[in-house]
Structures are given as structure tokens and as C-alpha cells.
Image 1: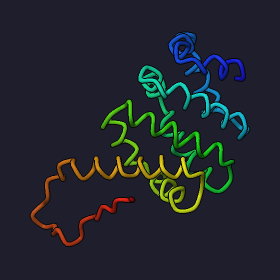
Image 2 (image 1 turned 90 degrees about the horizontal axis):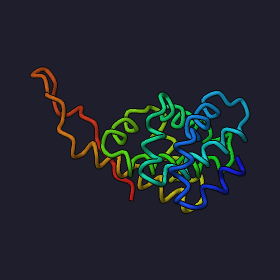
Image 3 (image 1 turned 90 degrees about the vertical axis):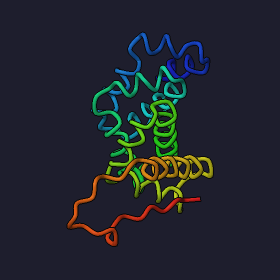
Image 4 (image 1 turned 30 degrees about the horizontal axis):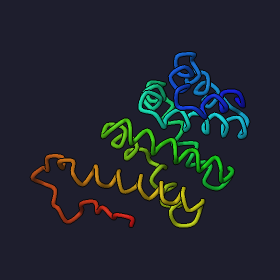
Length: 168
């Protein structure tokens, strides 16, 4: 992992790392990791890889990885290191940036993610993590504000609809 981190310091090596299968190896470690430090290091490296569009696409191509990241962030809000939370938020922000509206929509439907992001904005994390969490929340809210509402049935009323609150 240390060697891979060193290689990823140069953006020119991101493509080589992806071609060598680093993303699938890190995803396998994250999905099966029993140790928090190993999972945290995997997330840190995936976050670094996902800074590039091709890296984000490679991360998004791993089945179950985005859901596992959201679960890990929700679980790490109280138990993991600040570094693990920082890298998780950074990775999710990069995935949204390079993955587009489809990724934002998937993240918006993950039950524990929104609460974890609000928690990070309110009181958990570095100023940079708080800023990224706030930006991620705003992107998710913006997506659902712009998305056309589902067709309303004649029996339902608008009085019981959901409200969207933007975090500034």
C-alpha cells in the first residue's frame, strides 16, 4: 500500500495503477477487511485514484463498493479515525464529481449516508471534510430539487410532501 501511495503521487501513474488492477485489489480489501486500519488505507488510496475521471470510473465499476463506502462512513461517524472519515467523504465527492447525476441519485437514496454527512458538517471532522460534506449534501439536494417529481395520485395531497433543506 505504501508503494502504491508513492506511485499515486504522480497523476501520470493513475492509469497504470488502474490497468494493473489496483482498484479491484483495494475494493476486495475494503469489502472483506476486518481491520479498520486496512480499510482506512484502502479508502485513502481509492480516494486518491478517484481524483481522476478514469479512476472514478474504475471505482464505480466495482460492484457493491459505493454502498460499502456509504455504510463505512455511517459506521465510522463514531468509531473510526478522523482520517478514515476524511478520505471517505473525499472519495464520495470525487465519485459525484466525475460520475454525474446517476451517482448523486444513488447516494441520495442511501439511508445512513445523509445523516452521516449532516453529522460531519455539524460537529465531526476537519474544516476541509466539513466543507466537502456540505458540498456533497448540497449536490444531492440540488439533484432532487431539479429532478421532476413523481406523478402524484389523485388521493394524495401536497401537504404531506418532503421538504428539502439546503446546508450553507
